[in-house]
Amino acid sequence: GESVGLHLPTLSVQEGDNSIINCAYSNSASDYFIWYKQESGKGPQFIIDIRSNMDKRQGQRVTVLLNKTVKHLSLQIAATQPGDSAVYFCAESGNTGKLIFGQGTTLQVKP
Amino acid sequence: DAGVIQSPRHEVTEMGQEVTLRCKPISGHNSLFWYRQTMMRGLELLIYFNNNVPIDDSGMPEDRFSAKMPNASFSTLKIQPSEPRDSAVYFCASSARGTGGELFFGEGSRLTVL
Image (cartoon, one colour):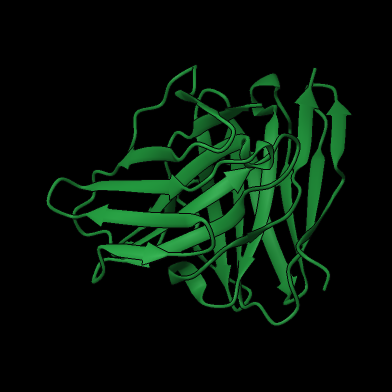
């Protein structure tokens, strides 16, 4: 998983632009991946998931890409809106069955 | 539909006191998870239950922490005695498909131990 740190990486984008949030995972046995969004003062909220037998999955305005070769996951948000401002977490689940969360990335949307 | 319900939303207590956090999972979900969130360590899995049975408690920090799930609709996380380093937001989540599926999180219980 991602290293623990005091400061979350921050991505700042202009409203209307596309956002790409990246995540690296360490367990090559992980076979299920989820992206969560967490707004201030709230619990994480499911966005989209993908299993290891896929490399791309699309939802409404969101796309998740999985590159198992380099153990990389990304979340693409099209036409980013102010309501997309939040902390985004990737999470992985593997042979242990546990869902392990990454460090998180703060997305700031500028009007 | 009601989501995962946690109480209390905020708790301020003094070091040494007992703290009990409560969770009501989504009806029909058979897996329940307790997570702790801090700036330093992010979201950490403390323990999870399948069908009311604790499956993995390796994330529970110390013997001061205990969790129970007496029935399918209720779980508690207890800290006794509490310490300032226990200050965090504690989340409960439930799932219909165990660890391989989407987790639905509650709003969290923010604990401050003075």
